[in-house]
Length: 339
Image (cartoon, rainbow, N blue to C red; front, top):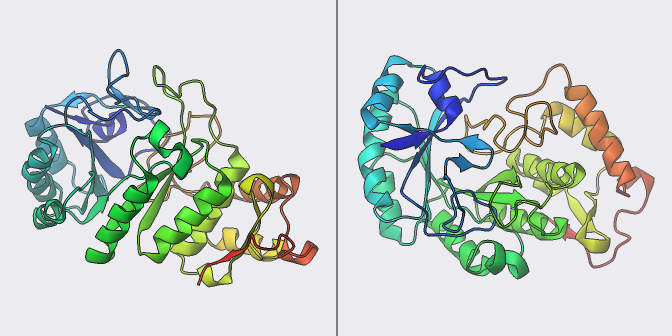
């Protein structure tokens, strides 16, 4: 047995549910009870009750043969396969068996979210047909890392950047915004990782029942939007235009751009969609239908203009400084330029 997201099973005709947006990636999960104990994760070893949730999504069990048959019967249903894994014994062996079968059945590129600990593990995964490996960093704050995730941020960064140097263009990481980090901590980590060639995927923190962080709120939308804008500019190769200034509490005070330039950039590339591997849209992974949309699964043609206006208005209410309305370098010593 393995698991798949409920949306994946619905696309494959293995569940009958209504979906406001369909996943464009097939999300699969393998591994037993997780030995990790991240404060925000429903798969953590200290979480009581069932472990059917990862973020807001349920992951029903499915037989491997049933899944393979469904993938074969639904060509073109997805653009990518993505394996999530728990930190449990035998996961690498399971992946090395499953990836070739799933890839053959679907003909799709495969991403794997797995915490590689040795170069030879990555070598084995790539040899098995994996296109990209994602190593989650999650927490952007060194001071919070040990308490919410375990370990040290510096060690996680070193692992991810080492692998990015060894396997250029094939390493992804995930950052969860809203774990208590400052905007500056998140922005500077994003900049550091992108300089090393790491693809950065953003998630908004989602409180999950029975976890240690179940009563914490999601991040402020404007904080998340600023970081989405940053990632969007970097992904488009436009980092050289940014001159980032930070203010009180580590908040991003300016990108060194005019209001008109920022509005134009978001209109040209709507940056509030899901960031991740090509073909990944994670519908409602961190959002409730009808609630705040941190990550849109696709460009919302009917509301995109409104979202852009609300972003610009939110920046103004947050005390953000546009280049044409003030001195963006006023906070001396707080500027980080991407070069």
